[in-house]
Image 1 (tube, rainbow, N blue to C red):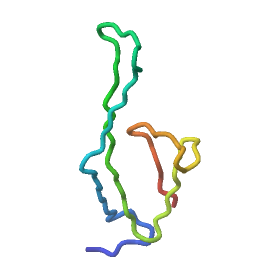
Image 2 (cartoon, one colour):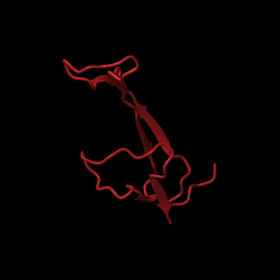
Image 3 (cartoon, rainbow, N blue to C red):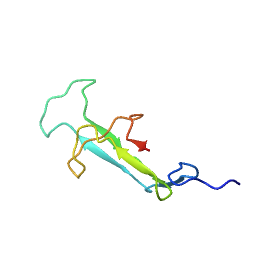
Image 4 (cartoon, rainbow, N blue to C red):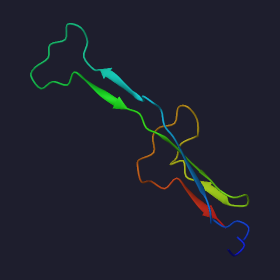
Amino acid sequence: MAPTPPGSLRGPCHTAGQQARAGRREITVYEGQHVQKGSQLGMFRFGGSTRCLLFRPGVNLMFDLHGQKAGLKSGNIPVNSQIDKVVR
């Protein structure tokens, strides 16, 4: 195998982390509220899995936070959105 140039993307490692149970029920009605047939009573929210890509030293990435500041109060980024790009 040929040597890999510094900063090359060849050989990133993917790791996946999963939780045994990552869901919760959200009740959207309150006691005594009048509901009709077909009214939403609540929903089940299923959590996701964690994905992690590890790159070789020397690979520089520029992250796209979609106008947010990283932290616990940031929102979700839509599926299939760009989250970073390689800076050469």
